[in-house]
Structure formats: structure tokens, C-alpha cells
Image 1 (cartoon, rainbow, N blue to C red):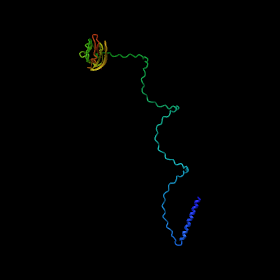
Image 2: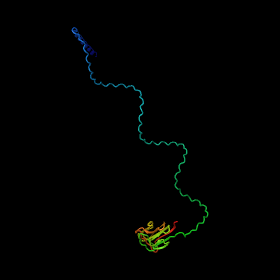
Image 3: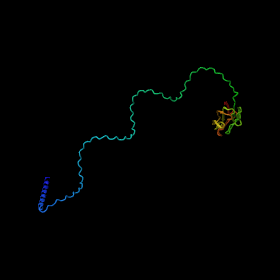
Image 4: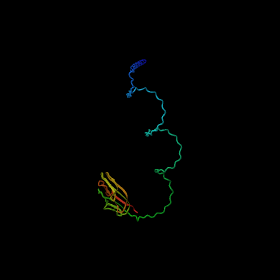
Length: 269
């Protein structure tokens, strides 16, 4: 490095010596004026970026900043799984007695109790009024087949034998009982049959309405009967008839297997 500096100094000295010689030769004939300063040159093109410098040392830790603004409340998360059952707590102290509740619904009827002790005999009652049958209307009949009816049509059965017909309220020609005294009546019938697979089904009819029936089938002698209590008004009609032509295989004779009866139980007030 020192050698290069010495060479540069030598070159500078040679240039200065030459300049002084030329000046002495021209000093006697002319004195040149100072030149006008030249125009400053333009800026050169920026150089290429230098290489990346080495990483600097870690700076000193700064002061703690101010607390930031609270964020918005997040959405409610999903319901968690049920936790394990905790241990049973200790029994608490008894509370004060509450007010009386409402009366409950009536309970079911209990079983019948044992019979009570026999009570004392009561005193003799007053003498009642003497009964009378003079004002009570009467109506009763019993009719029958004393001959074989065969297979009668599906219509009122006309019983030819009149056993009883008090008041003549049973009409032998039509086979119907016609009410003359309103009240409660009892009616009963019996139907007989014989043979193999002969069916009978007899019904008590009231004003065209089937009230009840009795049925019997099979081989040999057989019978079917039934009874009913009816509330009748004047001119009501009651009779018996078979259900159909498939249920009218009747049989009777002088022993009487088919009959029809009725009577007034008591008259209406």
C-alpha cells in the first residue's frame, strides 16, 4: 500500500514541473484571462443496491403498552354433556307446616260391610184402606193351536182355540190383541216343533215392530218361548208371527205345543 502512494506522489511532481516550464515560456507574450466556470454536470445514475448488511443486535425491550378495548361477547356455545351425579347431600332441616291443600276426589266405594245388629221391633202401623177391585179394569186372554198349524205365513198367527178371552180383546179372526185399557201388560208365547232340522223363530210384535223373539232348531220335539212386559195405550196391537218362511216349521195337536197369552198387570192412572 505504501508503494502505491509513493508512485502517485511522483506522478504529481512531474506534472507540476511541466506546467511551470510552459508558464515561464509564455509569460513574456501574453496574460490569459480566467475562464468562465463550466455548467455543473448532471447527477449520475444511481448505483446498484449494495449487499445486504449483517443482522443487527436485538433492541432493548420497550415499555408495556396501554390495555386494549374489550372485544365483543362471543356466541353461546353448545350445551355440554350432563355431569356425573353428585353425592347425596345432608338432610335439611324440617320446614314450616304448609297450608291445607284442596280436598281430593272421592275415593272408590269400599266393600260392603258386615250386617249390623238387628234393630228393635217397630210399633204397629196404622190400619190401611180397604182394597177394592171394582174400579180396576180387567183384560186377559190365552189362545192356542189344538191342531197342527203346519207352516203359517209370515203374518199374525191366528190361534183357533180360545182358552180365555176376558173382555174379548183378542181377535180370533186377525190373531191380534187390541188394547182397550191403557196400562202395563204381560205377554208370553210358546212355540213347538218336531222333525229333522226344522227351524222355528217366533216374535212378539207391537204395532208392526218386532219386540223380542225365541228360536229353536234341530231334530226331535222342541219348543221355544219368551215373555215381555209392555206399556200400552188404547188401540195398540200385539201379536205373534214367524220370522220368515225358513223359520215356520211349527207343530201342535190336542196336547197343545203352541200358545199365546197376555193380561193387564195394572192400569195407567
